Image (cartoon, rainbow, N blue to C red; front, top):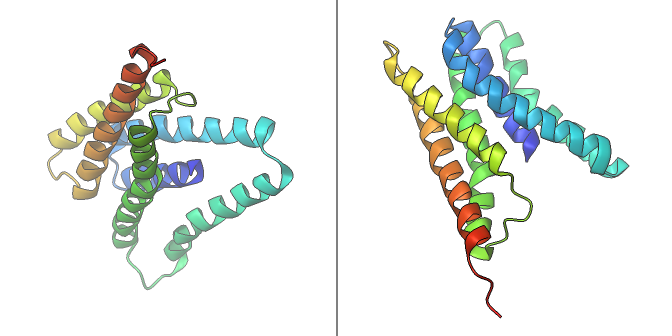
Length: 168
């Protein structure tokens, strides 16, 4: 699912760079870099050859919508706006099941407090910057709110399950 996170960040980064919204691109650069690093280290050190091929295939399919930009009959701004909504859906597909699983099972052994803290800070900064723009993007606002909520829940679960006394 990190391939979705990386692709989704690239959609938002491209949108913001195209419309010269450089400051709002920064949170997506942070989240994209985190997703990219996790994906790289997993593929490099933990993934079997078959898993690496699956990751490359998923990343390729995730980036396939960028090929719409090659169609001269489509307006670039419209395509990039649509890609932000695709990124929002991809992020939901990636994050919501993980949050539900953490809530249901209480298993926090593979979660990183630093990762969720950085994601949360990126979400806060992004939301404030987006709200301060003259024409806030609905997809961006929804994305930042979802980022804040899911990361707050994940971080809260981690803290709760780590300090909770173990039942004998």
